Length: 302
Ligand SMILES: Nc1ncnc2c1ncn2[C@@H]1O[C@H](COP(=O)(O)OP(=O)(O)OP(=O)(O)O)[C@@H](O)[C@H]1O
Image 1 (cartoon, rainbow, N blue to C red):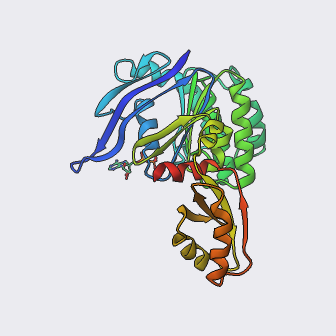
Image 2 (image 1 turned 90 degrees about the vertical axis):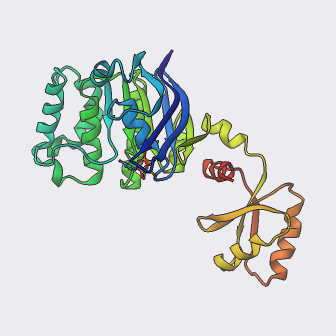
């Protein structure tokens, strides 16, 4: 069953008609963990705000749990959970007070749905008398997730929940999402971190308001069409410049401590080594590698 259906959504802002969402369509199955993956300004927050009924699209249609985002906006507001990109809880209220506030607004109690938040709440409970404004990034994020869950939403929208959070808390956060999925909650999460994409059931890669690809992370990397190599040399900048002029090159770019280069066929690699040596590069190491989501994203952008 489809929990979220999005059809040809378009959104522009202001007199200049800045195009933020460009004819976007996708659907999310009930109980799915679906990721919107893209850099800053790709249009992720605009899509989230439209689906949570905080913003009207210019055109197109969407529904959440069968409810139309325009006609049935009140029903959607009562049934979904939303964690916006910016910390939006009451900074002057304590952890406990924020949670109590959100439960009350939705006509429920903390006790009624405690099972949903227990795993997360126990981690911040020792600080429950502390004001939200005085919490660390990871703790704020856990509190925001508890507040988004306390009314037992059918669908949870998490807008860049791990931005600015340390790597350990990021990992913990994704483990929490996996556990929530087991409770039959549909989760739509956005992130600019490509490494988080592989933790979703399916992902939509988005850039400039347009969806470039929608599939499972495994299928997206398997569909990578070129031969990909990781190349290292003693100096990165001359290496990148030299790769740019290699005749059999399709594309090349920095990737951590390596440069990645794509070639049409694996044969080109012996030529590549000779070419780099002839250009006086030293410490050369070339290895064939499998594409990551980030490589696939770069390929789709070209
Ligand atoms: N209120 C607004 N007025 C004008 N332009 C806006 C407004 N909100 C967003 N935009 C523009 O729309 C585009 C998409 O922004 P959006 O916030 O949806 O992207 P995003 O993927 O969530 O990125 P970010 O993580 O930076 O918020 C960007 O070019 C942004 O500058």
